[in-house]
Amino acid sequence: MDLVVRGARVVDGTGGPSYTADVGVHEGRIAAVGRLSGGRETVDAHGLALAPGFVDMHAHSDLALLRDPDHSAKAAQGVTLEVLGQDGLSYAPVDERTLGEVRAAIAGWNGPGDDIDFDWRTVGEYLDRLDRAHGGQGVAVNAAYLVPQGTVRAYALGWDDRPATGAELDRMRRLVADGLAQGAVGLSSGLTYTPGMYATGAELTELCRVVAHYGGYYCPHHRSYGHDALAAYAEMVALAREAGCALHLAHATMNFAENRGRAPELLALLDAALAEGADISLDSYPYTPGCTTLVALLPSWANEGGPEAVLARLRDDAEADRIRHALEVEGADGCHGVPVDWSTIEISGTADPAYGRYVGRRVDGWETARGLLLGDRLAPTVLQHVGDEENVRAIMRHGVHTGGSDGILQGTKPHPRAYGTFPHYLGHYVRELGLLTLEECVAHLAGRPAARLRLADRGLVRVGNRADLVLFDPDTVAAGSTYERPRVLPTGIPHVLIDGRFVVRDGRRTDVLAGRSVRRTARDLR
Image (cartoon, rainbow, N blue to C red; front, top):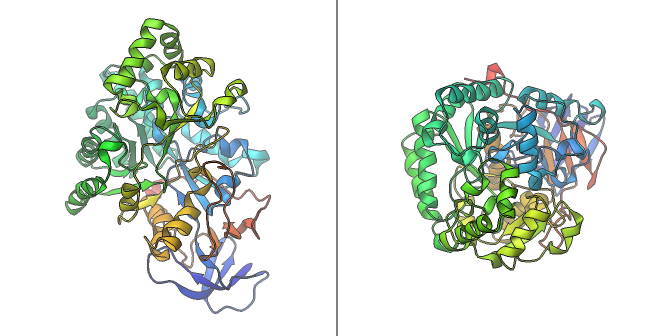
């Protein structure tokens, strides 16, 4: 053996009872589980739990992995695989025009990208770029990719609010098929973000038929998490079932005052569909505030035409007043159909340091929001304090639940979920509240996500599987990040391995870059 981990409490990712055993690693794989003799190297794991590496089913590290070889935000949590390309907007597939537009639209999520060489255009080329990042060494953790439907729509027909023509729909189908053939695991949507929100249900169904053909899954940020949230969930369930496509609901929750305590209604909807044979899963983060860009709250008509058109409307006093009325009186679709309560909106980051004084402050009205959007060119990110703890707890207990941080790493004061989601599950919701057993929680964070991704050799502590492993202390593991100090790393996670190589050892990030793109191949598609 290259490595023997001795005396660990093995929590194997199946949800079954944990047990004490040694685990042997050889050539990047789990080679034996049981009572083992010595290896070239030994780790004493008495008092520690050994689990499969955690899978972040909803990550926004699309540029962070290329920018930061350390990436301790995720590696220190025990995350060994992230799923990128979320919410319908990312950087492949693109042409020159679309790339520039997308970079501007999601600068709040990933930064403007001025420090990145965008030398790819296709999904396959982006995945290749991850593999040869940082001087050819790779990236900090493994990464899978979803084809982003909003980016595909922008590529095929721009940022106009209109139905796609037959030729444009054919082009979108080809772009989605190409991305899946090149290794993407599915399709994402952001149906409160432009231009993805302009797609009709029929258009989305046709794209999901392509996803189903390739054996992938559809991951929508659906049309509302506030007003009519249940109807929005029901639309996604019906759409995926019509297309014959697996469905994974992104950051599934029920927000705003009108949805307090209504998670059981959502779960009943899902249970009925599951009982009829639907293939459904979901992810959530264990916090109540959401996090997005400030511009995302605007009504869809204000975003039509792309970022420069938005800025032009904001500069026009009459158009700006229309936007204010939609936000404050009507309830903009970008704000989930609920009139905005500015006291719930906290600025978490700006691109221009000149606006840094606003970070950590609640927005005091429309004119402040308008000034920030114009001055910082749509880049401000916000925390939106509209969640409900009862809903969060109900959803995380469901049998198809998985963990996803939705972690935006940009900004002076990002959401603490970016640095704390996985240890917060283990420390707060398992140890302190007993809402899940340790075995159940690890299944939610490792085994079940790997099954959704159809990765047969990940997600379980099983002989022959890849040695993506995390060792943590069940008695002390905890998130270090807080709303006031969001970039503090967790405690109680001394060792993390990817392919049998230590990316975290004795609580410190090593210089190992063991992460690679995780691609679906033709062998995986059926």
